Amino acid sequence: VESDALVHGADYGLWLDGRGPFPDPRSSHQPHGVMAPSRWVDHAQFSWHDAQWRPPAPKDAIIYELHIGTFTREGTFDSAIARLDALHELGITHVEVMPVAQFPGTHGWGYDGVDLYAPHHVYGGPHGMKCFVDACHQRGLAVILDVVYNHLGPEGNWLEQFGPYFTGVYQTPWGKAVNLDNAHSHEVRRFLIDNALMWLRDYHIDGLRVDAVHAFIDRSAIHFLEQLVSEVKALGLLLQREVFVIAESDLNDPRVIRPVAQGGLGADAQWNEDFHHALHTLLTKEEFGYYADFGKLSDLARVFGAGFCYDDRHSRYRQRHHGRSAAGLEGWRFVACMQNHDQVGSRGNGERIGRLVSQEKLKLGAALTLLSPFVPMLFQGEEWGASSPFLYFTDFVDRNLQDAVRKGRKSEMAAFGWQAGIPDPQAASTWWHSQLIWEEREQAPHRDILRWYTALITLRKQEKDFGTAPLDPQHVIFDEEQGWLSLRRGRFQLVCNFADRTQSIACEVPCGLRLASSENIRNENGRLLLPPYSIAVLEPSEAGASS
Image (tube, rainbow, N blue to C red; front, side, top):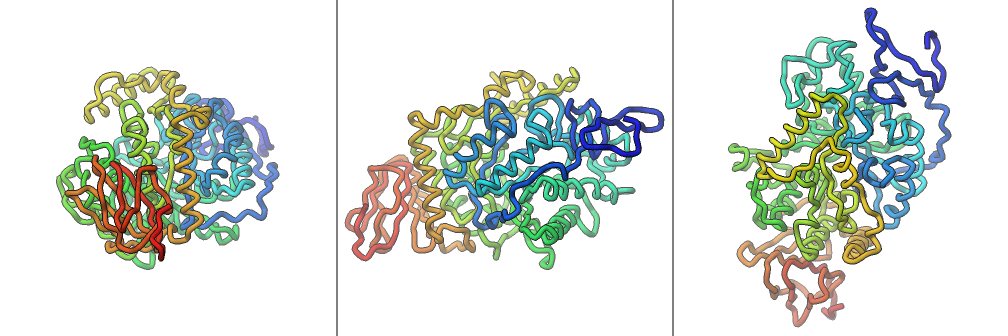
């Protein structure tokens, strides 16, 4: 259109120095993709039904990470709504949605978004996303959105035409770094932070998960993350509802989540990679890549007791000391998972842990995750041991970019020892195979796994002792040689057998079995008999009777 005033639904483009038209960098809708005109959206046109909505506190969260494009066969916001009741019944409190900002093609992970203000058109665009969030709130589910500010995708990325959004002063794995601290960086930071505020204000998002904050290159006195969190909190006060920020960081630096008044950056919580790696290696015995730093019960015990395993310790993988002590922080500051999109999708064939280990090990890992002192997170389909993989898939149009993605994927996987049979990221079948098969929930053995996850979540929500709590090394004991670990959670005790043989372990006090991963677990005469790779939840009992 050629007009000084845009109306809801009008398509338009921008011309720069006689060149164009380009999509608007702040476009709210790209109904025909990243190369097409923008569409004006009047956010006041949508009728919300969540005026009384107040999200559960982050410390009480049970998070479910999902990818709109594979959560259902249809891969849309509307089709996802039809599955929300299942998450509510499971006991989920927060739905974490992988990035939805407009990216090239029809399907992809979303981490190569280029129109940060526009929900992906294939998913359902702005209207579909608002309906999804509104439906979540109607079911008591808070919504966390994954946002990516450390880089943008290459295809359809016109930002550099509009100003110095990137700087060649620093180089990153994605090319030029986002300009956070050089000339004109104020406007760049404003562009990104305004985007974060838009999701919270116009889409009623409850919290943000900020991707790879360790990749921000910023020497400013006020770090970009600190500014982002500060403005998010200020908007929350204005909106009169709690909003929060979860960071992804591989630095093991608690300053990311310490308050600004204590010299931190102020994020509410962060993903805890050490928890995943310590648990994963105990269950799978894998040793490649960063898993080389883990594999002992002492590693998992350190995480339970202190938050990080590597807290200024030497890392064999990094060949240097890594991390800093997280002493004094409460468990809810850490998000713990047994699998997530990265740890599954970064494998050569996208295998979920249920494909790598026995059902006994899967149930053991699930219990330690869901009954931990941290905020637990599940990855879509985990609750029933979904058989579908989660592969890396893209849909670029540019042939040179297609070839580069294929070569890069093969090279990356070869570094981990996966060289044959790596699915083509550009093949539509790679995306199709990653879609969940919901019918499995009613079939064996998936039905039994779902029952176990439901029982664990029910127990966590019923008993306040299983809420997040201050971390204390004295709450965990283990025997590396014998292969058992015991974790105290209030009045409860989790006793785990990581060995491939049945073990008899003395109970500290008279107790009964509250929950057991195997029907062969016995509590007899003050001793607990645990079959291989099993876990028992013990509750003090004056009579010491088993159940």
